[in-house]
Image 1: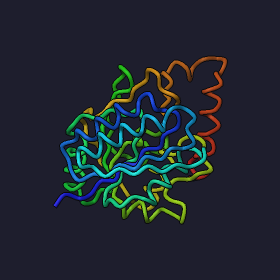
Image 2: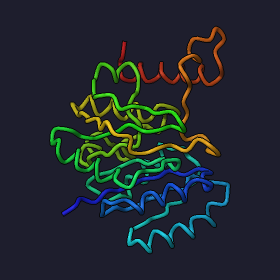
Image 3: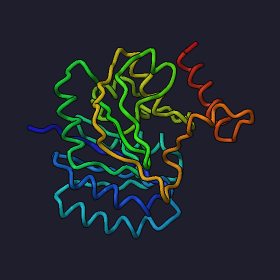
Length: 244
């Protein structure tokens, strides 16, 4: 029997792209799935958009749950969704993610085929740029985050690193996903890379879920605001995880 996958989606003013993302989920070959959407204090037309989404999801026989909360950030929303979820497998989904129909099936097969692994991750596209999947390596992970949040994770391993709030550190404003992977590796949990490109992130009309800077930005003599924020957040992660 297929294991239930809980798909947890934090949403903040992403009504313009949410429907496309959900449509890619209800077309998944893999079943069973449950979709949990956490509306993190959106001020757009979320309430109107979500009504149509619920109708479409329920027509496909997929369970969907909507949770509304005051704006507290993605980590809080993901933790809330995790507490409400039931799946043996969990995937934290961004509202700008569009999946190929075989994505969850491929991820599940790989996770079940690697009993020693706690999670699996794949390559993806960010707009027109392809991000290839790098094989899991602790030393590399200490240097930079190469694993996207949209990865399939065993619930039991998330519970092992969770306090009462959940697996995400809500004090962090950036690199919450990097922090998650580093925390799991401290518990000797490992991931498995799937070399296929299984999904893409929408970049047009997107309000700040994903952010990527090309390499030349890091070589500029005058640092941009984004780069300064990046460097400061990196220092926080290094200090928390005692990375030299």
